[in-house]
Image (cartoon, rainbow, N blue to C red; front, side, top):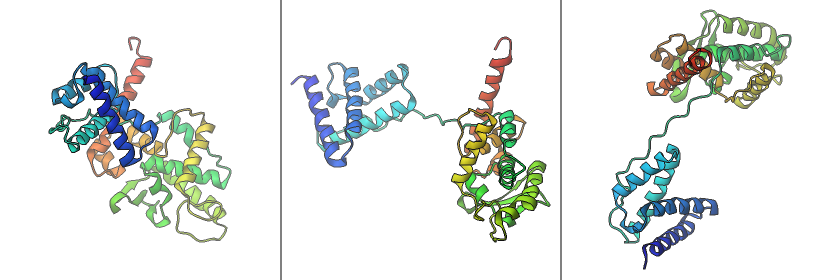
Length: 298
C-alpha cells in the first residue's frame, strides 16, 4: 500500500474514532482532518506512522515561517498530539513524536485602554443635573482613580469608602484586602453623589451598597457596563471597550507618568508582578504610536 493511501486510511480511522468517542461537530472533525493533511503534504512520500520528532519540529517551523499565528500552530500541535496518542493506543507506533515538543509561546493579548483625553471625555459625559448622572460620574471617577475591578466597584459598601482620609478598603480576589487612594476628584464627586443624588435614588429605602439604582438596589456589573458603552457614544469614543477599560487606563496612565510596577501591582491587587508587567508593553506601544504619528522621521 502506498504511503498516501495508508495516510488517508490512518486519518479516516482517527477522525471516525473522534466522532465515536467525543461526538465532535462536523466542523471540528474537518479541522482535525485539515491539520493532519497539512502534515501529510509537508512529509511528501513519508508515512504518518514513520514520523519522528525532528519532522514535527521542522513542520511547526515551516508553519511559523509561512506566517501562521502562534495560536494556530499551537492548535495544530494539539491535533498531532491527539493523533499520535491514538496511534499508540492502537499499537501502530511505540513512541509519540510530539512527546517533548513545546507549543509556540502565545503572546498575551494587550488590554484595551484609552488615552488620557478619551478618559476625560468619558468622565465628562454624564449629565450632572440629574441624580443618575451624578451617580454615574462618581462611579466613573472612582474606578479611574482606583483601578478597581468592576465587581469591586459595584460591590462597594458605604463603610468601605472613607472620604475623610481619601481611601477605599477593598476585599478582592482570594479574599485579599487592600487600601487604595481615591484622589481629590473622586472624593469630590463621591461627596456630591452621597449628599445630593443617593438619597434621591433611595427615597427612604435602606441599603449599605454605596452605588444604587433608582429602584434602591445595588448596581450590577452588567448595568455599569451598559453605562460605559452609553457614555462612550456620548463622548464620541469609537475605541473597542471592555468592562475593565478604565482599570486598564488607570494602570497604563500611572506607568506612563513614572509609577513603578510594584506600586501599580499593589493598587491593582495583582498577586503576581508578571500580570502587571503587561501594562509596560501597552505604554511602550502607545509611545511608539505617538512617535510614529508626530515625529518628522517617525
